[in-house]
Image (cartoon, rainbow, N blue to C red; front, top):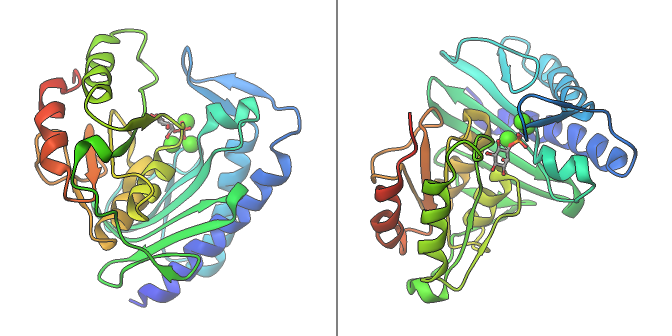
Length: 262
Ligand code: IPD
Ligand code: CA
Ligand code: CA
Ligand code: CA
């Protein structure tokens, strides 16, 4: 299997969707609801259609699992796609969203690509070959002192049902670190840990397409990825901590107290 060819195919697909999303960001959107605050715009499935078109052309033998359209069992070799990560931002014209494409072998990411269209930044990694931003190698940060750390997080779409665990964890981190950002696109949060702009990220109840590409980026950039208990993380788990490695223990001492309800 030529992972470099597959990484190129993933980049091409992510760029195609990203360009479409960038061009249409400030046009009016048709918005429908998957849940109370869980939105979907006309651009979400359209971006997935564009990705499918490229992947079917480049790798016709590899099936695709996507958030909006392409439903298959996650087994063997398959593409795992979030065509628009940051839909709430997109719906509001807040220019912060990503396109995430991962090549999976069962629950293991082999290739991970995250494109940030507004910044024209292409984050990409393949297993064992390192992580790159627009072709230049990236590394996680060196920050050891939590008081100097900039963290990222996000909140699940069912937060209104039981907000306490999420807000308690947030409050506890807030008093111990330099700052926390909730920018609204988990894939970009992970890409930013990989390139050292964030020192750590935690979030619960993410979906496999939110995290698959990002966790490979973080690992290939020298970082650490586990669940809230410090156990090995796969994109099918319910809680994630991703850091530069140096503040991982610090974060786990807080996250283990706030496991989400199953
Ligand atoms: C969402 C974003 C957000 C995170 C949510 C995700 P979507 O993905 O990544 O940052 O907090 O949990 O579901 O729905 O915009 O693709
Ligand atoms: Ca997402
Ligand atoms: Ca999405
Ligand atoms: Ca969504």
